[in-house]
Amino acid sequence: MSQPIPEDWLKAVCSILATRDYQKIIIRLRARNDFQALFPGAMDFELVDAFVQALQAPGISGSLVESMSEPGIVYEFIFVRENLPIYGKINLSSEGTVVIIYSAHRPLKGNQL
Amino acid sequence: MSDPSENWEKIEIAAPVYIPTLDGKAIAETVEVKVEAYRNPADGEIYLDGHALKKLEDAKARYMGLLTPEEILDLRERLDMTQEKISELFQIGKKTWSRWENGRERPSRSLNLLLHALNDGKVDINYLTLMANPALRRQPIEAHREGQVRRTFAFRPEKQAHEEPIVRGG
Image 1 (cartoon, rainbow over the protein chains, first blue to last red):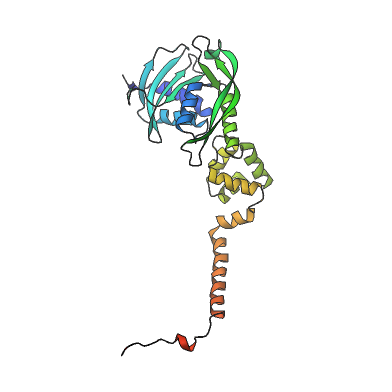
Image 2 (cartoon, chains in turn orange, green):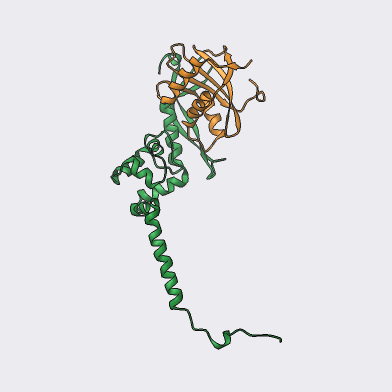
Protein backbone atom coordinates (compact mmCIF):
# COMPACT_ATOMS: atom_id res chain seq x y z
CA MET A 1 0.00 0.00 0.00
CA SER A 2 1.48 3.31 -1.11
CA GLN A 3 1.80 6.00 1.55
CA PRO A 4 3.69 9.27 1.91
CA ILE A 5 7.40 8.58 2.41
CA PRO A 6 8.62 10.07 5.74
CA GLU A 7 10.22 13.47 5.36
CA ASP A 8 13.26 12.53 7.48
CA TRP A 9 14.09 9.60 5.24
CA LEU A 10 13.62 11.70 2.09
CA LYS A 11 15.86 14.49 3.38
CA ALA A 12 18.60 12.12 4.50
CA VAL A 13 18.62 10.21 1.21
CA CYS A 14 18.52 13.33 -0.96
CA SER A 15 21.30 15.03 0.98
CA ILE A 16 23.59 12.03 0.43
CA LEU A 17 22.70 11.60 -3.23
CA ALA A 18 23.03 15.32 -3.96
CA THR A 19 26.62 15.37 -2.68
CA ARG A 20 27.62 12.58 -5.08
CA ASP A 21 29.95 11.41 -2.36
CA TYR A 22 31.53 8.31 -3.88
CA GLN A 23 31.93 6.69 -0.48
CA LYS A 24 28.29 7.04 0.46
CA ILE A 25 26.45 5.98 -2.67
CA ILE A 26 26.19 2.32 -3.69
CA ILE A 27 24.33 1.23 -6.79
CA ARG A 28 23.27 -2.29 -7.57
CA LEU A 29 24.69 -3.18 -10.97
CA ARG A 30 21.27 -4.28 -12.23
CA ALA A 31 19.80 -0.87 -11.40
CA ARG A 32 22.58 0.92 -13.23
CA ASN A 33 22.30 -1.32 -16.29
CA ASP A 34 18.48 -1.10 -16.38
CA PHE A 35 18.55 2.69 -16.24
CA GLN A 36 21.25 2.94 -18.90
CA ALA A 37 19.30 0.61 -21.18
CA LEU A 38 16.15 2.73 -20.71
CA PHE A 39 17.97 6.01 -21.29
CA PRO A 40 21.03 5.28 -23.44
CA GLY A 41 21.72 8.99 -23.86
CA ALA A 42 21.98 9.51 -20.10
CA MET A 43 25.33 9.60 -18.34
CA ASP A 44 25.76 7.28 -15.37
CA PHE A 45 25.35 9.90 -12.66
CA GLU A 46 22.03 11.00 -14.14
CA LEU A 47 20.61 7.96 -12.37
CA VAL A 48 21.54 9.57 -9.06
CA ASP A 49 20.21 12.96 -10.16
CA ALA A 50 16.96 11.36 -11.35
CA PHE A 51 16.40 9.92 -7.88
CA VAL A 52 17.10 13.25 -6.19
CA GLN A 53 14.58 14.93 -8.48
CA ALA A 54 12.01 12.17 -7.91
CA LEU A 55 12.34 12.23 -4.13
CA GLN A 56 12.10 16.02 -3.99
CA ALA A 57 8.80 16.00 -5.88
CA PRO A 58 5.93 17.06 -3.62
CA GLY A 59 3.76 14.25 -2.32
CA ILE A 60 6.08 11.40 -3.30
CA SER A 61 4.65 8.19 -1.93
CA GLY A 62 5.89 4.63 -1.67
CA SER A 63 5.96 1.46 0.39
CA LEU A 64 8.26 0.25 3.10
CA VAL A 65 10.21 -2.86 2.05
CA GLU A 66 11.37 -5.29 4.70
CA SER A 67 12.77 -8.09 2.59
CA MET A 68 16.22 -6.70 1.77
CA SER A 69 19.18 -8.27 3.53
CA GLU A 70 21.22 -5.08 4.04
CA PRO A 71 20.50 -3.22 7.29
CA GLY A 72 18.59 0.02 6.86
CA ILE A 73 15.23 1.47 5.89
CA VAL A 74 14.11 0.65 2.37
CA TYR A 75 11.35 2.31 0.35
CA GLU A 76 10.05 1.43 -3.08
CA PHE A 77 8.21 3.99 -5.19
CA ILE A 78 7.33 4.90 -8.76
CA PHE A 79 8.41 8.09 -10.43
CA VAL A 80 8.28 9.45 -13.95
CA ARG A 81 11.27 10.39 -16.08
CA GLU A 82 10.89 11.55 -19.68
CA ASN A 83 7.28 10.35 -19.60
CA LEU A 84 8.31 6.84 -18.53
CA PRO A 85 7.22 5.45 -15.18
CA ILE A 86 10.22 4.03 -13.32
CA TYR A 87 10.20 1.72 -10.32
CA GLY A 88 12.79 2.74 -7.76
CA LYS A 89 13.96 1.09 -4.56
CA ILE A 90 16.39 2.72 -2.15
CA ASN A 91 17.98 1.80 1.18
CA LEU A 92 19.12 4.35 3.75
CA SER A 93 21.61 2.50 5.97
CA SER A 94 20.89 2.10 9.69
CA GLU A 95 23.44 4.78 10.53
CA GLY A 96 21.93 7.07 7.92
CA THR A 97 25.27 7.48 6.18
CA VAL A 98 25.02 5.30 3.07
CA VAL A 99 22.40 5.04 0.34
CA ILE A 100 21.95 1.91 -1.75
CA ILE A 101 20.04 2.21 -5.02
CA TYR A 102 18.61 -1.24 -5.66
CA SER A 103 16.27 -0.70 -8.58
CA ALA A 104 15.59 1.67 -11.47
CA HIS A 105 13.50 -0.13 -14.07
CA ARG A 106 10.06 -0.13 -15.70
CA PRO A 107 7.38 -1.18 -13.17
CA LEU A 108 6.66 -4.89 -13.37
CA LYS A 109 3.11 -4.65 -11.97
CA GLY A 110 1.66 -1.91 -14.11
CA ASN A 111 1.90 1.43 -12.38
CA GLN A 112 1.31 -0.06 -8.93
CA LEU A 113 3.85 -1.12 -6.32
CA MET B 1 32.50 2.42 1.96
CA SER B 2 30.88 1.83 5.32
CA ASP B 3 28.37 -0.46 6.96
CA PRO B 4 26.15 -2.25 4.38
CA SER B 5 29.09 -3.52 2.38
CA GLU B 6 31.31 -4.65 5.24
CA ASN B 7 30.96 -8.32 4.37
CA TRP B 8 30.95 -7.93 0.61
CA GLU B 9 33.72 -9.29 -1.58
CA LYS B 10 35.72 -6.96 -3.76
CA ILE B 11 35.76 -8.22 -7.34
CA GLU B 12 36.49 -6.96 -10.85
CA ILE B 13 33.72 -7.02 -13.43
CA ALA B 14 33.28 -6.03 -17.06
CA ALA B 15 30.32 -3.66 -17.01
CA PRO B 16 28.46 -2.76 -20.20
CA VAL B 17 28.65 0.83 -21.38
CA TYR B 18 25.91 1.75 -23.84
CA ILE B 19 26.98 4.24 -26.49
CA PRO B 20 23.88 6.05 -27.74
CA THR B 21 22.83 6.90 -31.24
CA LEU B 22 23.13 10.59 -32.14
CA ASP B 23 19.56 11.30 -30.99
CA GLY B 24 20.30 9.55 -27.69
CA LYS B 25 17.24 7.35 -27.94
CA ALA B 26 18.77 4.00 -28.83
CA ILE B 27 21.96 2.04 -28.28
CA ALA B 28 24.42 2.27 -31.17
CA GLU B 29 27.15 0.18 -29.60
CA THR B 30 27.91 -1.62 -26.36
CA VAL B 31 31.44 -1.74 -24.99
CA GLU B 32 32.67 -3.38 -21.82
CA VAL B 33 34.72 -1.57 -19.23
CA LYS B 34 36.46 -3.25 -16.31
CA VAL B 35 35.69 -1.75 -12.92
CA GLU B 36 36.04 -2.76 -9.31
CA ALA B 37 32.77 -3.86 -7.77
CA TYR B 38 31.39 -5.54 -4.66
CA ARG B 39 29.59 -8.86 -4.48
CA ASN B 40 27.24 -9.75 -1.68
CA PRO B 41 28.05 -13.43 -1.00
CA ALA B 42 24.61 -13.96 0.53
CA ASP B 43 22.68 -13.42 -2.69
CA GLY B 44 25.37 -12.91 -5.37
CA GLU B 45 24.20 -9.38 -6.18
CA ILE B 46 26.86 -7.03 -7.53
CA TYR B 47 27.18 -3.41 -6.44
CA LEU B 48 29.12 -0.40 -7.69
CA ASP B 49 30.37 2.52 -5.69
CA GLY B 50 30.72 6.10 -6.91
CA HIS B 51 34.27 5.55 -8.13
CA ALA B 52 33.19 2.73 -10.42
CA LEU B 53 30.24 4.77 -11.64
CA LYS B 54 32.53 7.68 -12.49
CA LYS B 55 34.87 5.37 -14.38
CA LEU B 56 31.94 4.05 -16.43
CA GLU B 57 30.65 7.56 -17.07
CA ASP B 58 34.10 8.76 -18.16
CA ALA B 59 34.41 5.80 -20.53
CA LYS B 60 31.02 6.60 -22.03
CA ALA B 61 31.97 10.26 -22.47
CA ARG B 62 35.20 9.26 -24.21
CA TYR B 63 33.38 6.95 -26.60
CA MET B 64 30.87 9.72 -27.33
CA GLY B 65 33.75 12.09 -28.07
CA LEU B 66 32.82 14.46 -25.23
CA LEU B 67 35.50 16.64 -23.68
CA THR B 68 36.28 15.59 -20.12
CA PRO B 69 35.68 18.00 -17.23
CA GLU B 70 39.46 18.38 -16.92
CA GLU B 71 39.75 19.31 -20.62
CA ILE B 72 36.93 21.85 -20.27
CA LEU B 73 38.66 23.46 -17.30
CA ASP B 74 41.97 23.45 -19.17
CA LEU B 75 40.36 25.11 -22.19
CA ARG B 76 38.99 27.97 -20.08
CA GLU B 77 42.30 28.45 -18.30
CA ARG B 78 44.18 28.57 -21.61
CA LEU B 79 41.78 31.26 -22.77
CA ASP B 80 42.40 33.07 -19.47
CA MET B 81 38.70 33.58 -18.88
CA THR B 82 36.43 33.45 -15.87
CA GLN B 83 33.53 31.01 -15.82
CA GLU B 84 31.20 33.98 -16.05
CA LYS B 85 32.87 35.37 -19.17
CA ILE B 86 33.14 32.10 -21.05
CA SER B 87 29.56 31.13 -20.22
CA GLU B 88 28.47 34.47 -21.73
CA LEU B 89 30.30 33.58 -24.94
CA PHE B 90 28.64 30.18 -25.06
CA GLN B 91 25.32 31.84 -24.21
CA ILE B 92 24.71 29.47 -21.32
CA GLY B 93 24.33 29.98 -17.57
CA LYS B 94 27.45 30.27 -15.44
CA LYS B 95 26.24 27.32 -13.35
CA THR B 96 26.07 25.15 -16.44
CA TRP B 97 29.71 25.85 -17.29
CA SER B 98 30.66 25.23 -13.68
CA ARG B 99 28.84 21.87 -13.74
CA TRP B 100 30.73 20.93 -16.94
CA GLU B 101 34.03 21.63 -15.18
CA ASN B 102 33.20 19.66 -12.06
CA GLY B 103 31.65 16.81 -14.02
CA ARG B 104 28.17 17.12 -12.55
CA GLU B 105 26.81 17.67 -16.04
CA ARG B 106 28.07 16.96 -19.55
CA PRO B 107 27.66 19.30 -22.50
CA SER B 108 25.24 18.22 -25.21
CA ARG B 109 26.80 16.75 -28.31
CA SER B 110 26.10 19.98 -30.25
CA LEU B 111 27.82 22.18 -27.68
CA ASN B 112 30.58 19.63 -27.43
CA LEU B 113 31.28 20.19 -31.13
CA LEU B 114 31.73 23.89 -30.46
CA LEU B 115 33.96 23.16 -27.47
CA HIS B 116 36.09 20.86 -29.61
CA ALA B 117 36.32 23.46 -32.38
CA LEU B 118 37.48 26.06 -29.88
CA ASN B 119 39.86 23.60 -28.21
CA ASP B 120 41.38 22.67 -31.58
CA GLY B 121 41.70 26.28 -32.71
CA LYS B 122 39.09 25.87 -35.47
CA VAL B 123 36.93 28.62 -34.01
CA ASP B 124 38.39 31.91 -32.91
CA ILE B 125 37.47 33.30 -29.50
CA ASN B 126 36.90 36.69 -31.16
CA TYR B 127 34.26 35.11 -33.35
CA LEU B 128 32.39 33.85 -30.27
CA THR B 129 32.70 37.30 -28.70
CA LEU B 130 31.17 38.80 -31.82
CA MET B 131 28.34 36.27 -31.87
CA ALA B 132 27.58 36.83 -28.19
CA ASN B 133 27.27 40.59 -28.63
CA PRO B 134 24.29 41.60 -30.78
CA ALA B 135 25.47 45.21 -31.13
CA LEU B 136 28.84 44.15 -32.53
CA ARG B 137 27.24 41.44 -34.62
CA ARG B 138 24.94 43.86 -36.50
CA GLN B 139 27.78 46.04 -37.74
CA PRO B 140 29.38 43.65 -40.20
CA ILE B 141 25.97 42.44 -41.38
CA GLU B 142 24.81 45.98 -42.07
CA ALA B 143 28.11 46.81 -43.75
CA HIS B 144 27.73 43.70 -45.82
CA ARG B 145 24.20 44.67 -46.79
CA GLU B 146 25.34 48.17 -47.79
CA GLY B 147 28.06 46.61 -49.89
CA GLN B 148 25.53 44.45 -51.65
CA VAL B 149 23.32 47.44 -52.35
CA ARG B 150 26.22 49.37 -53.77
CA ARG B 151 27.22 46.49 -56.00
CA THR B 152 23.66 46.09 -57.18
CA PHE B 153 23.53 49.68 -58.32
CA ALA B 154 27.06 49.70 -59.66
CA PHE B 155 26.59 46.78 -61.94
CA ARG B 156 22.99 47.35 -62.92
CA PRO B 157 22.96 47.20 -66.73
CA GLU B 158 21.30 49.91 -68.70
CA LYS B 159 17.88 49.01 -69.99
CA GLN B 160 18.05 47.76 -73.54
CA ALA B 161 15.56 48.56 -76.23
CA HIS B 162 14.20 45.01 -76.29
CA GLU B 163 13.37 45.26 -72.59
CA GLU B 164 10.79 47.94 -73.26
CA PRO B 165 7.32 46.66 -72.42
CA ILE B 166 5.57 44.99 -75.29
CA VAL B 167 1.98 46.05 -75.67
CA ARG B 168 -0.08 43.24 -77.12
CA GLY B 169 -3.49 43.38 -78.71
CA GLY B 170 -5.37 46.62 -78.83
